[in-house]
Length: 291
Image 1 (cartoon, rainbow, N blue to C red):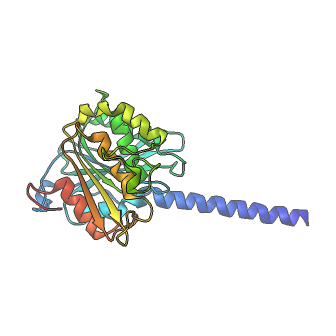
Image 2: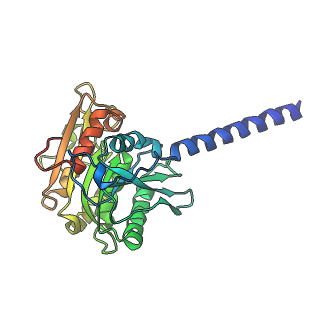
Image 3: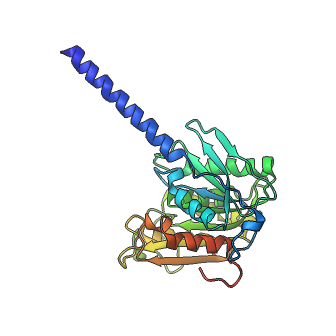
């Protein structure tokens, strides 16, 4: 009897282990890279050589932005050239190559450890990735797109470490429902100045480090958040948590913009044609074009 129980238990453990490995493999595989040739570029967008980094949120990896990147490649507005994966031990692995001549190149970031209780490790890993891009590929300027905690990690990296001269400068950042201060839930939790009445430890640290933003004061930051069913939340991130960024950048980053997407929940804000078009336009739209 005990042997039978042991056999069943062992089989269950093996099945769970195999399921985890399969899930990890599926969620870590990025969309196929398709570098964009100059002659193929959609006429509705500008051509730049500035790479754009995509940061996934909690419990997601490549699957978070596969569809958006695939849409951009299908529309010939940008092309993926590289995936950078951070393994369980924090080691960085580069798949693909970035050339100076690449047009609107996209870099997909994935993490093997994406189920933590904090995005602080991702912020530090992003910092290492940016250093690598400047040191190895001579990237002096970059764009960044982040969903949920991926966006929170981008904000943290920018404010805490962005003044490091070993890093490239931020050109454009697009945040998609990124909670910047998770200690607040309602508009009445915020003072007229925009500062939360009470703050999380991580947000207080950002306030202390906000002067580091001067190193990237020329950047454009687009803070996009959703409202589901006309509510002050996207059913996952309250709008005020995203708007907490406003207080941090005020007086330092003049090109800071907030965009509300109505009838949009936390998942839809990065997985719909509407969001694909918005992000494409914010990154590569010609002057005067509307999001």
